[in-house]
Length: 238
Image 1 (tube, rainbow, N blue to C red):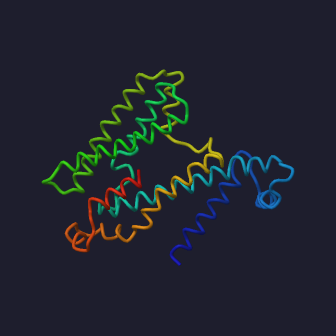
Image 2: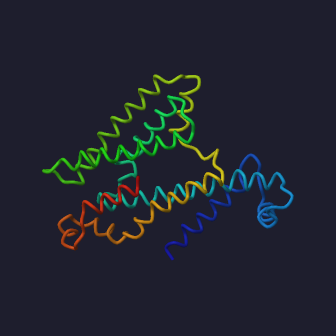
Image 3: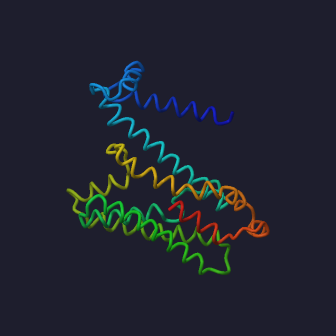
């Protein structure tokens, strides 16, 4: 019953996103387009299937991924205010993408550099936190993440200053801001399986996520290997 209101809100949001815009569509047009899809492509078909539905589906996928990351980090760090970028993933991915854009690499390499940058940032944070023995491991992870994020953010700012203001800077800015305006179903076919595969260990180990919200001594008493479990969650979220 508690899921009914979010589900209704999601359906209303989808209908609003599909029907509104520079080329407005009525509910009747949407229904006709969905019912007669594939025959005699009209302007309504192009707007719905090539522009709006891919963006809506991608937005839902991004929302699922971010909400999963948020709830995992909040349970793991025992703090309801924790965000998914607390371990420097966002800053690392941003720096990797900015480096690729600065050297005029193609789009595929930009995405690869972003992934490598995020993974490298998390690995560095985890390595620094693991070397601290006398402090709370959660506190060590958070402080290491804040420090690495600040350092990587400074690297992004430096490259934005050095970038060509007439071409590279605008590309860097729009990439860091993010957007779904260029999304297609082909992109979704590539990204969706990766997101679902990354979420699979989080779903299978969801009961351990609940245990991590307890004190470390209590979690260990229940037979949980804290270091290994946190590492699995962090790698999955990266």
